[in-house]
Length: 305
DNA sequence: TATCCAAGGTAAGTT
DNA sequence: AACTTACCTTGGATA
Picture 1 (cartoon, rainbow, N blue to C red):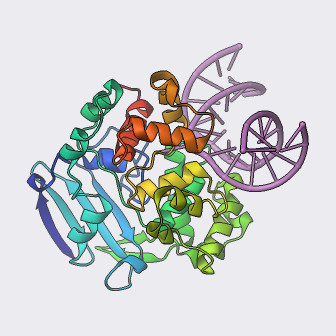
Picture 2: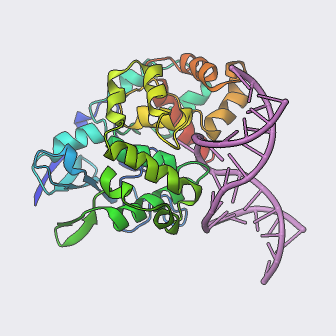
Picture 3: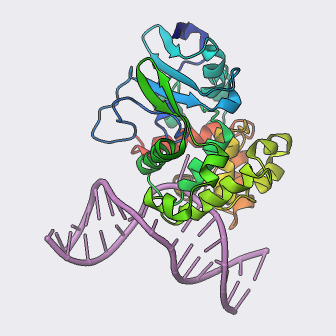
C-alpha cells in the first residue's frame, strides 16, 4: 500500500471534501459506511472516501483503488499505486484556485450565499464513461438513488479489485455494460433508463463515438456531440461536460436551476434550452458559470440555508 | 394501510 | 421547430 498527505495549505481557496463528493456531481465515490447521500447519517466531515480509477486511466493499465480523508491539516490518502496525488489532483480539481473563481463570479446575492455556505466545494473531473452512464441514470431520479444504481452496476459488472484486505469494484467498462441485457439492467432498478445505458455502452464499446472526443470541440458543439448517445439530451450532456470534460462554463439546466431562474433571474428564461442556457451562463459570469451552477444546485437542494 | 407524488429528463409522436 | 405524452421505480408525504 502507498500512502501520503497533502497539506491543506496547498489548496487555494480551501477544500471541503464532503461537499465536493456528496453534492450530486459524482457517483463514482463511496463511503465505507454506505452513508453517502442518506439523510439519516450525519455528515461525517472527516470520513474516508474511496473510488476505483478505471484501468484506462492508470499508468499500469490496472484499476487503481484510491482512498482519501480530509483531516485538520492535510488530505490523507492511501492507494494501490504511488500515483495517487496526481490522480487526486485531477479527480478533485485540487489545482483550481477557488479564491480566483469566486472573485471572477458576479455579485449576485444567491451566489454569494451559496459560496459562503459551501466554501471549499470543488467541481470534480470524473472518468468520462462512468460520468456519462451516471447522468443517463439521473433522469427523474433522486441523488441518493442514482448513487445506489452506480454501486449496483459496479458490483454486478465491474472488475473486482483487492486492496488492503477489502474488495472494491471498478465501474464497468463499455464492453462489460454493453454485454448486459435490458432485462438485466432493469433488475438493477434502472427502470426505463436500462435500454439507454445498454445502447450507449454499445456505442462506446464499438467505437462509434466516445465522450472523450467531445474535449476537442467548442462548447456548444461538444454538447451537441454528446447528445448522439441514447438517453442523453442537452441537460445530461452539460453534466458530462462540466463534471468530466473540463468545460467549466457549462450550466446544466436541471430542476433546481430552473427554479432558481424562475425565482431570481426570470429574464434568463428564453423558452428553449440553448438560449436559456446561454443567458444564465452569461449571468453567472461565463468562464466559471458551471461552478456557480453547482454551488446553487447544492445550496437549493439542501434547503437554501 | 392505501394512495399519490415527484425525483438533477429523454425519446417518440403530433401539430 | 415547438409542443405533448409515456416512461420505471420508490421513498416520503398525505389521507
